[in-house]
Amino acid sequence: EPEVTQTPSHQVTQMGQEVILRCVPISNHLYFYWYRQILGQKVEFLVSFYNNEISEKSEIFDDQFSVERPDGSNFTLKIRSTKLEDSAMYFCASSPRQALVEQYFGPGTRLTVT
Amino acid sequence: SQQGEEDPQALSIQEGENATMNCSYKTSINNLQWYRQNSGRGLVHLILIRSNEREKHSGRLRVTLDTSKKSSSLLITASRAADTASYFCATVSMEYGNKLVFGAGTILRVKS
Image: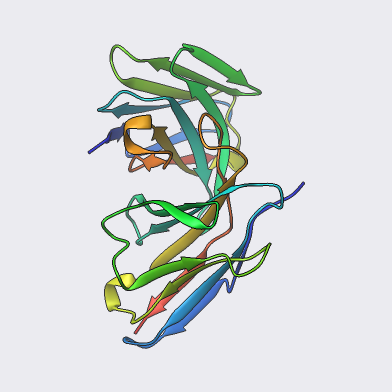
């Protein structure tokens, strides 16, 4: 069964450094998402992406964040200058259509900012 | 905020018993979905119920939706130790785009 994959599984970085989290969505899906989950808290929406552009973003997704689909398979989340409060589990998800369907989540990348 | 609360926050039951988790939300929705998360792992989609549906079944799972009360429940029958996980409801509303808005979740522990 096709699945969403994410790399790395765990990333440790120093405050102020740039990180890139990578995702490979399911191949025939058209909608891509990033969510994050701070330890012990709710899963929060960051951004959705369709047709090579951001379709929606949350207030968390400020100028320090960017997303890109550099080729036909990868979907990346970049954090330009990490802060301690960016430490969280980051989940990528994809779906074949926009509405009324489930989203398929990857296993997540645990980002630790020291 | 689009999402409300889930209750209970934590639930501990014996294997073989049924587990019921509840979810409330605040806005009109297109659909409501339930996800499971094993400790430190990704989210697994369990079931989706549309706003015009009242009940849905999938194996040992039964989901109900009451749009007049803006609430949903997830029932897991004949629970197993492997059902131990966190369970989240998430709503989708056209008013808020296609993003999933998650509740705080219920931690379920099934004791064998």
